[in-house]
Image 1 (cartoon, rainbow, N blue to C red):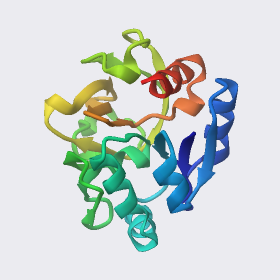
Image 2: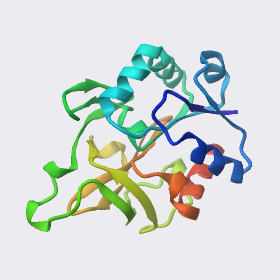
Image 3: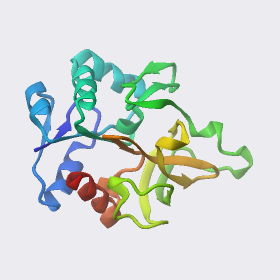
Length: 204
C-alpha cells in the first residue's frame, strides 16, 4: 500500500484518482501505523510552506516521515511537498523543513530577469530538461511537458537535481537523494507524462 499523507494541504483526491487509473493500491491517511506499514509514501502539498510545515511538525507526522526516510522507505514529495523535503524555506519568513535533501526554498522572482515580465506564479505547462534519468524519470523523455503552479523553487547542489525547466531561468523541476524523490510540478495534472512518473515511482 502507498500512503498519501493527509495533513490538510494537498490535492489528495486527484492524486488518489491518478493512482487508481494505474491500478496501484493507495490510501489517504494521517494514521501513524498506516504510514509506518506502507510500502511507499507520497507527500503532497499546495499553499504556503510555513503553514504546511507547522501542520507536519505539530501533528507528529514530520518525525514519522524523517524516521521512515532514514529507514530507507521511498518518499515522493509533490509541489509544496517537494519543497518540504529541504532544510529551510524563505517564503514569508524562514521556516524549517524536513531536511531530507540539502538546500533551501526561495522565490523564483529572485532569479527571473525583471525585463522578461513573466507572470508569477509560473502556472501552466512547461518542458523538462532532464539532467539525470533516476528511477522516477526512467520512462520520461527529454522535453516532455508537465504542469506547474508555483512561486517558489528550491536551490540545492547539482548532484540532487534530476531535471529543470526554463522559465526565464533554470528552475529546479525534480530532485532525488537515494530513496527520497521530489517533483515541483503536479504529475496528477500532467496527463500521460505525469502518470508515467507516478507509475515509475510505484515500480521502484
